[in-house]
Length: 491
View 1 (cartoon, one colour):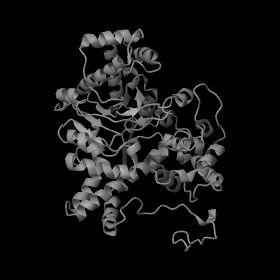
View 2 (spheres, rainbow, N blue to C red):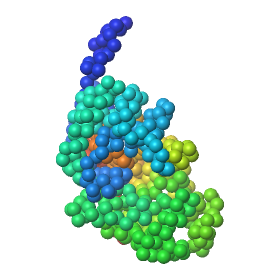
View 3 (tube, rainbow, N blue to C red):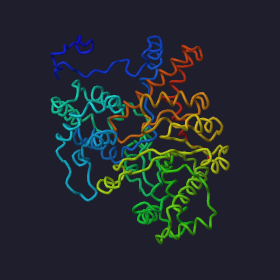
């Protein structure tokens, strides 16, 4: 066997930990072809330092309001990151051994060093995944780590990260500046009293950390705790929700409260994109029976579809932008869901239909200048067949960025190749990072900017764009288009 040109090792010599250092290649994720890579590098350099617009995230508002130091490396980088835990669980690592809390308060691993060692020992599992890219970026750029994760390096890496997060300039609010985050949106239930956002406003961050209104829990009468959420909606809104008309009035009150707190959007994670409306008396009757606990699965789906249609009308009243991301079967494994709760039981994509499903709402509001909806999918077969043609026809629509299972290098490339010819660049929303893993946000934006630069470089070399046009487009995709897509509509 010849000596490896990469490691410089013969067959009789196993790689040692000291031989491997974690380095970020400046051309990572850029094209292999040298000519295209050179152009892509020039384009990327014009976007690399732009501020981040983070309009769809799941970092809790309380994290910024309290501004407390992060607990430890495992609790920051492993336990809350479902990309990381999902991969480890797929290889037989129990969620409890990764510190994922149990619903019943039962025992799970509480030794964060042990959790971190499990992650490092299984580092090779992440080869070829976007998690590998994000984590390497975090380790090197954010924490100053230059060791490749392994069983041998787990403890020194843990110590380095622990020391870094203990420093005063590594608190959540300070990281907004360090990460160059200009605007970040949290995702908050309709029942939120927005207390943390009020606190942030008093601290001068009210226009930088803003809420997003997510009413899924009250739109689906079969959700656990639905009735309790309806009662809480009444409490926070001050509106009686014992009738359908009261329910709608309570929703309008909360939407206004979110808008007053700086909110720009609503968020809807329904299984289906169906927007078929119901006659008002039928909707009122269904709501009444739901309060009594007597509706079928089909009626739940009909009510959820109806509420998407109703929400579009409310959006025309208050100017909040709708984000619709259907097509995920939540909590696929009942046992894991029962033990560890929502978002832990494996969410799996399903085939999704948009053209017929969205027709009712687009017939009514598709050309209304007061309405804006951004469509996301994890079913990439619909990019060229449905979503790009829809976004390329209706002024009210924007096509959201590759999201969740598709926010990967190849997923992003396929998105540009399948959607751009029909929708163009300017009917898309720019990048949406969609994460609870705060420290990974810069890495996610960096990857997207590199992939866009690579795609635009090919258009330049094919003489389909000038380089100046490519740079302008890259800047728009990275910074301007998210701000435009999520700007408050004129009510």
